[in-house]
Amino acid sequence: MTYHLVQFNIARLTHPLDAPESQGFVSQLESVNALADADPGFVWRLQTEEGDATSIDPYGDPQMIVNLTVWKDSASLKAFTYKGDHGQVFRNRTEWFDKRVQPMVVLWWIPAGHIPTVDEAVAKLEDLRSNGQSSRAFTFGRFVDAPSDDVSTSV
Image (cartoon, rainbow, N blue to C red; front, top):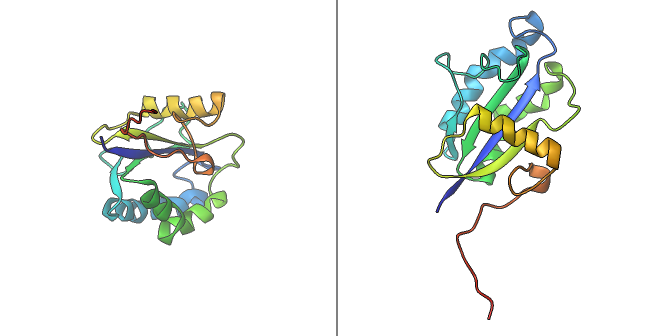
């Protein structure tokens, strides 16, 4: 079986999405999403008809932004996250978002073809926050390899 890597992150804007202070972030959404869509390691991302996920509000806080993506492997996700145009946006995140006080990113493996739901993602982040790192919910800091179908028997 082939597995894909899911990434879910949340971040709370310091100002409303339509505030002038948030425009540095908002103005880059379309181009960064297009970069993800074109990346050879990219599989899927959560989006509305507007082409992004800024109106999806599972936390009851319109300033909480969610991002849910699926990638072919960890190398693809890491390269996209930390390099190029997205890497620059990532490095500048403190200009637009509140400081993190608890984990805001969670990773987990899914069988290829499965599309994760927002509820599933919220539950995975809560699992990480409540129980710490595990094979169910982890971060790049304590990365877990994809499940293996190899069954070894000891003799």
